[in-house]
Image (cartoon, rainbow, N blue to C red):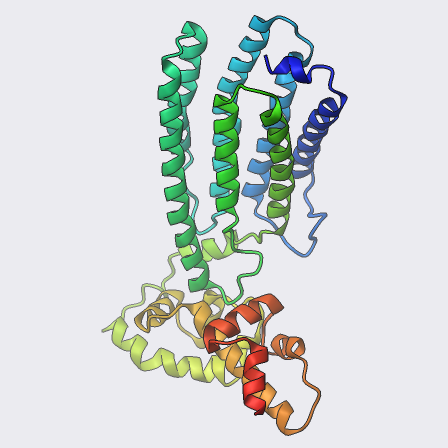
Amino acid sequence: MMYEQIRGDILFTILYAGVLFMALIASCYLLLRRGNAFAPDIIPPVRLRRWTGVYFAFIALNHVWYLPILYLTSNDDILMIDLIGGMLDSMTVFPLSIVVLLSMLQDRRRPLWPIAVMTAPVTLGMAAFIATRNKALYPWIYAYLLLMGLILIIYMVHATRQYGRWLRDNYADLEHKEVWQSFIVLAIVLLVFVIYEFTSDGPVYIYAMLAVNAVLIVYLLWRVETLTDLSIAVKEAGEETSEDHAPAPNPQLSIRNSIGSLLEQYCEQPQLYLQHDLTLSQLAQAIGTNRLYLSQYFSSRDMTYNAYINGLRIQHFTNLYREALATHQAISIRQLSCQSGFHSYSTFNAVFKQSMGMTATEWMRTSES
C-alpha cells in the first residue's frame, strides 16, 4: 500500500505535524482571541471567524485520526482507519468548508441545513461501503460527488454575483468586502476531497494534500482577518422603518422629481462623495430620504450606487488635475486619487479605466497634448 512508502519518512512526518499544528493554532487563535492581530484596523465578521475556527479544529482532528496509519503494519487496520476517516471527513471537514464559504457572503444569512442534506448521501454511501466492502458502491459515490461539486460551483457563482451586486448597490468603497476568491477556495476544496476519496496509487497525492491544506489554512486565516464585518449594514438595510413605509401619492414620481435635486444639493455640491466608505443608508439619511427610495432612484437610471459615487470621484480627479496643470503645480496621481475620495490606488486605477476607457496616465498624456 502507498502508506508503506511514507512510513518512517522524516520529511513527511515533519510536514504532517506542521499542518496539524498550523490548523490547531489557527483554530485556537480564531476561537479564543477577540481582537484582530494581523489587521487591527479591520473588524472581521464574528460568524465567519467562529465557523472558520471550527473548520480548522476539525482539520486538526482529521490529522490526529490518521496518525496511527504511520505506525500500523496491518493492511486491514490501515484500510479501516482510512475508510472511517473518509466517512468522518464527509460529515465534518467537507460540509464545514461549504459553511465557511457561505459565511463570507454577508448580504443575508443563508440557511445551513441544506448542506447537511446534500452531504448526507456521501456519508451514508461511505458507511455502506465500510459495512459491505461492496466496490460497486464506489462509482455511485463518485458520480454523486461530481454532481454535488457541479451544483455547488453553479450556486456559488450565482450567490457571489448576487453578493457583488448587493455591494455595489450599497457601498461606495469595496475594499475588504469582495470575496471572489471564494471560487478558488471552493475549487481547491472540491479537488482535494475528490482526490482524497478516490486516489490510492502512490504517496504523491498525500504530499499534495498536505501542501493544499497548508495553503488553505493560510488563505482562510488571511481572508477572515481582512474581510470587513458588514452585519450592521445588513441589519440597517433589513429594518422596516416608518420612513420606508411613509405614505406617498406616487413614490416613483417623488423619486424622479426630488431625489436628483437632493443629491445635487446635499451630496455633489458639498462633495460628500469624498467621504471614504460612504454607504447608501448614510447618503439617504444625509439627503433626507430613505434607503429604499434612493435605491429605486439609482435602479431607475440603470446604475449602481457604487458607480454613481465613483463617477463623481473620477470627475473630481479630472478637475483637480486640470487645476494643477493650469497653475503648474507638481502632480502626483496617487495623491490626487486620495484627494478624490479613493482609499485604494488600485481601485482608483480600475475605476478610472472602466469610466474613461484608458488609464489615468494615458488620459493625462492626452490632456497635456
